[in-house]
Length: 407
Image (tube, helix red, strand yellow):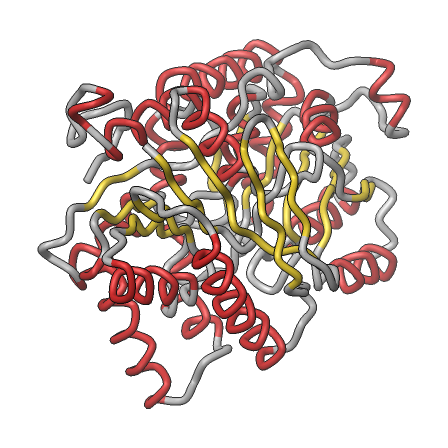
């Protein structure tokens, strides 16, 4: 089997960020599938790299989270055009594996199916256009209608559709009842993220104290609501709770976040610059609780955030500020608490219990790692994807599987 894997933002563990495509592509290669990735990088030249036997084509399309709306749209359009040019040059594959976001990558699949009769599988990481519409980035009613029609067309023409969460799958099911739909949620690398005792050398390295530590690790953008963690830190400081709060990441709202920390005069807050997966794993080691947050919008409740899976692989208690399927997991398996910004003192008392009762803390952390081992390893995701790609070749039942909630 030969696959061209389309992902505009392909990243390796050394680069950090969302590395799902790297692990899936690597897993496919290790199982005898030939994979070529078509992606983009912020340069003015084309580049080719062989990464763990994955041939990766880097196209010169600049993109930055700080781009305005129209500049982002231009970057999406440019990538589609450049990717189409490059696919023509490559040997014919058996199929295209196309991942969003952005939704515009689906245009490549529609074009390849019409021009070359190439089938494509479309992976939905976030619901577009629902997300930018609910955030307020898209308001024109005609544009909304066109984008929803485009979304449905991508699903209907796809050979198979893969959703990253039950909520995403349910939305797709209403828009495309006849689609062959599967759920392959996000995952973490259990070899990188492990449950271990806090390392004193790492505490010293990051200039942190050996006390209850609540950490946010990930993007700091418009939809991430990381400022709510600072509100909690301020209240903890005001009421003399002995906790420390950490943010590790980057994004368009980072300057605002650091400015807010300065204005609140937080002495219990530390910022650690964005780093590769190894650095994230180090910060997870010296954390007790992972903060998972998004803006309070219905569409964001369907997300499958990398930070959650890294946290449970590391055996951390989860503090989550929104409802949805991740919240349901936290509640069902007793691995954390819901942070209601209107009732922050409840959260502080919960954190105080964890700080004072190590047995409770350790039990919840162990349950967190067990949840990861049971459902969310990279091996389970790769095996499930192999079956979805070719059930006759790789064996198994594509409708069953390793997950709590399937399509």
